[in-house]
Amino acid sequence: MELRSGGGLRSGLEAALRSAVRDGRLAPGTRLPSSRALAQDLGLARNTVADAYGQLVAEGWLTARQGSGTRVAPGARPQTPVSRSVALAFPGLAAGDHLPYDLRPGSPDLSSFPRTAWVAATRQAMAKAPHDAFGYTDPRGREELRQALAEYLSRVRGVRADPDLIMVCTGYVQAIGLLGKALVELGGQRIAVEALGFPDTLTVLRASSLATTPLPVDEYGADIGALAGQPADAVLLTPAHQFPSGVALSPERRTAAVAWAHATGGVVIEDDYDGEFRYDRQPVGALQGLDPANVVYAGTASKSLAPGVRLAWLVVPERLMEPVVRQKRLADRQSPVIDQLTLAELIAGGAYDRHVRRMRLRYRQRRDRLVTALAAGAPDVRVSGIAAGLHAVIELPDGSPSEAELVKRAAGLGLAVTGMEMYGGSGAERPALVVGYGTPPEHSFAGALRALCATLAA
Ligand SMILES: Cc1ncc(COP(=O)(O)O)c(C=O)c1O
Image (cartoon, rainbow, N blue to C red):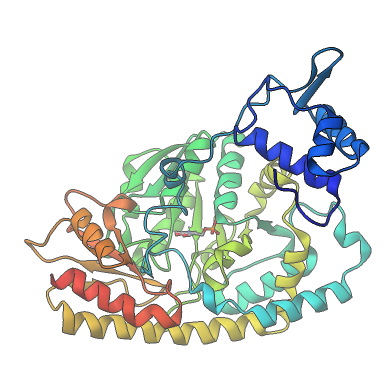
């Protein structure tokens, strides 16, 4: 038995025994040596062993009975380590995580996280925060952050945001869950969702007891006209940059979405996940600006900073705010305060804008490199959805291998990529790969592009 040095011999012995029970080396019912014998074997004081046994009895790992000595408790089952197949069932621990090149969509370049600015902002936030900031505070989030977001969203995205109607969430995935449950609380039963989309969204909405109806997507974005034929209490859209097809919702359909909300009393949810990243023309302003009474705006730090920050925000119409706040309280009471204060500082001090500007330039260069590399290395593919965001769609020519085959071939070349099928696109549409050019760190981008071209050219 190996004991940890430092941290106390008794706690080292406790840890070693717990771990032996946990991984099955000590089976339930096994009799342990007497404290005297074990103390002698290990060169410890008898009391040290007796105290460790006593602690583990109190925790339920061991039992001690007069006459039968100290044994491993019958209920202390060894825990099977998480097998690889189970781990692979969780998105984020998916197949491909081990490959050297990664062009899967959904993540910004994590190596560019603004660490220095974040630390400076945390320091400032800590210097300013009143003591009560560290307590149970407003479930909507810290006022400092709601103020900073209201100003930022109005300036950059044209959102009409009252800080009182902002809800800070633990990521968009939580945000959409809160909205789903709030809609159900208000009697909602059905939500229309773009037929191509982020798979977690459907799972979360269904878990909140809403039925989902697919809304077709074409080159003008979601087909809002299709809402006419079906009852829906809400519709979820990605107007600035449809995920994953990359098209912007056409001006006519933006107007139609707002008109539908007016006519039916329905709610439009606008997922603006990468709205800051637009390259070739002026950003399309948020749909929410057209009709703040009926459109919920959802933004996230997952693309502009990193998914691990787990901060997102909703700008909520007044009629939905109360149930959303109630659901947030039920979900986790409030999002972590120190990160909220840091983000508030980062936005108010201008470092967030500077980071977004720097990354916009970098992603634009990457997008251009992707287009140039494909034109030379795989001229038969068609690249689309490239005016904005961090990913592009590569439509495969007739007669090309299936998406699944290409994904497999790419993996053989050390590259993780995703087929359109994964986002609900299959069958009738042309097969395509969805390529997240924002994902790799800068040093591996060129290698990732080479592997992609080799995959498509082979
Ligand atoms: C369409 C879409 N919306 C939102 C998100 C962000 O989710 P979260 O804020 O939970 O990281 C993603 C992440 O991949 C996404 O693809």
